Length: 103
Image (cartoon, rainbow, N blue to C red):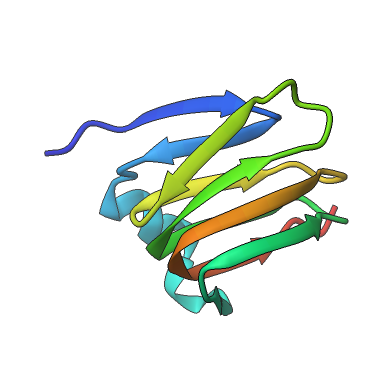
């Protein structure tokens, strides 16, 4: 069984290889899907987002992060904090399930 590890930079939490039981518990398959092609995207998160990448590779940076970059990709469970303004540099087209925190 793959081990699960998580790290946090820019307030983004990346969990590598979440277990299938955790994904089932979260109900990932019932979440809406979103995708984008490779490119750079300026994004602002008005609510906390939890997403699970089915495919893709992303580098996230902010203007004032002192070159701090967060990378994640296919198979990662990612929590993005409310209020984050960032650039997504997508090198491999992204396909993900996502859910916004209603609080």
